Image 1 (cartoon, rainbow, N blue to C red):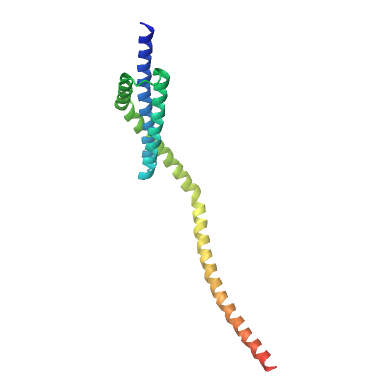
Image 2 (cartoon, helix red, strand yellow):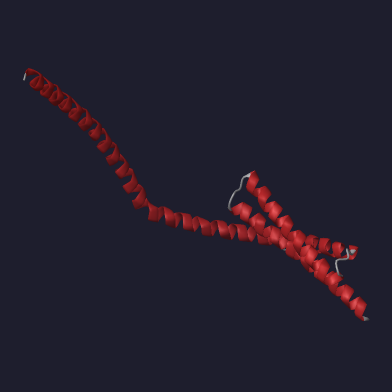
Length: 162
């Protein structure tokens, strides 16, 4: 084969691998969304970041391999790589990694729940004690106010008599 044909075939192979890589990166986002639920704002933000990453990656591939020239066989190669990965490895990878990460997070949640039990107990008891102290301080405040008012009146009476 001649050198231009080899370089074109390598470019097609790189395009195919780029399609696989882009779909793999999106699968990482899919796994992340399955493990940690997001609201619409964060899903949109992740999608914008993903598409920015894709644009930079494809631009870099086109710039380095074909001097920035858009070649349709490269786009078809990337689409073919995406399709092949999506139909073969993607479902297995996403389901397996989602289950593994959910189970690992479940174990961590159980561990933190066990570790946090004494702290929750102490927080509950301290809340009750704080409420009792607050009620007691309100009573003490009322008692002191009455006593001080009585002392104030007594001092006024004593001072006025003299």
